[in-house]
Length: 112
Image 1: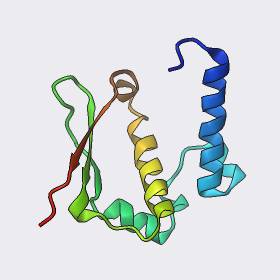
Image 2: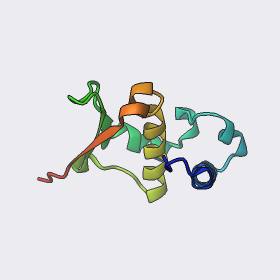
Image 3: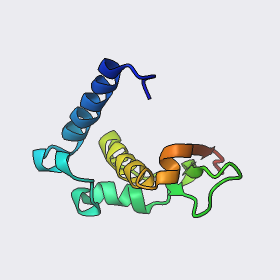
Image 4: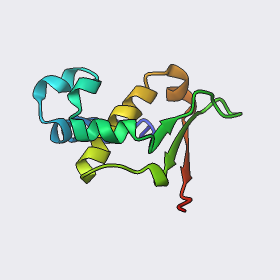
């Protein structure tokens, strides 16, 4: 990711784990994947709202499709949104093809 610059790569890894600690506030969580039961009820409402969705099929380039539907947006605080997005993003990258080929993001901003 950092073009073989080990210091830059190490900085990104430290940033990742510091952000994870800041968001979820439990040092035990640093050594494992985020689980649904790590999210509070407001975070879960955001996940369940359908605002963010992972398409069950890949695009023609075999990439994972991640969609945002603005009209379904439901969260109380920015932290709820970020924790929900963290959970979904980390779940997506469990797939090795997603790690190799990436994610395409579709934002649907229609608002009636």
